[in-house]
Amino acid sequence: MKPLLIGAVAYTPNVVTIWEGIRDYFADTDTPMDFILFSNYGRQVDALIDGTIDIAWNTNLAWVRTVAQTEGHCVALATRDTDTVFQTMFVARAGAGMKDLESLRGRRLALGSKDSAQAAILPVHFLAEAGLADGDVDLLRINSDVGKHGDTGRSELDALRAVLDDQADAAAIGINTWEAIGRDQLMPGAFEVFWQSPTYSHCNFTALDTLTDERVQPWVDRLLAMDWENPVHRPILEMEGLTQWVLPKLEGYKSLFEAVETQGITPRW
Image (cartoon, rainbow, N blue to C red; front, side, top):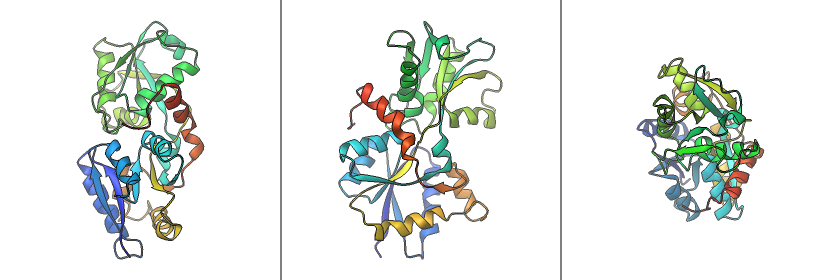
């Protein structure tokens, strides 16, 4: 059988190692696959829509834009367990006395790249839900990795440094960056969370609805069968930031669909 062709964005060098490991996992089965790496999500979504690839490993914004460009003729196939409980964390200097989003009124908030759902698009959405309109908070936008939808985390680290440098009073970052601060001890004790968002969905494997179940379902079933307790599988799962592949929670994208619409974010790049 012709291998399924999967697209992924090369946001860090170990992406190659991850996808070579996943390709090896599917080798010598009835669901072989190969992969293509892209420099940004715009090109990856274009490649999915024009049929260059069969499946795209998309961020939540890439999923929303694929839905818009295909008028809903696409499906989310699988996701990481960590992608179903993603959050945005609003952080300030430890001891700054920030208590909630209202504490940001009249203050400066550092945001990550403009195409980062967790560090720019959804934070603005959450501010609006809290009754903070345009102008109520001074937004410092740090667009240091546009095209990769915040995958590198660089703009979020830059937002944190802006707080340390007194250019902002607080920063909005994804939960993975927040956990990395503690895990890697990048900035131990410097920050505290004063508000965290409800959970929402992040990345997923996206296909067009023209890809038949016969072609894709065996691949999905085998993906879901990757086992954390298997010492061969675990290194790949660890590098990709999950313990188990699961089915997507589509309701978890609702807040981002709303944010994209209200903020006038275009379907195309």
